[in-house]
Length: 88
Image 1 (cartoon, rainbow, N blue to C red):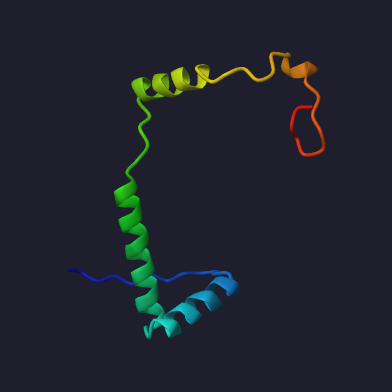
Image 2: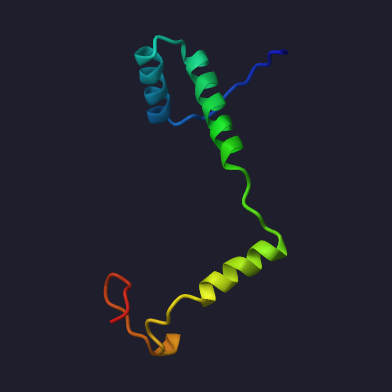
């Protein structure tokens, strides 16, 4: 395995403080803690996979959306909304 160097510029100070605290809590250097977090994030993304964006998947989403019940048949310009953004 080839090793590389990564320099992180303009990291928010609260994120750096959190990373330092995590590194101390896990008895690691900040570098090793950063590598562990990146590996964990990569593993989670690999497991999640990418959402399908093909025409068949989109058609399935649209079909499911159209099967939902109509709760308010008024046109959008006639619907009144309260302060929280919910229809009245």
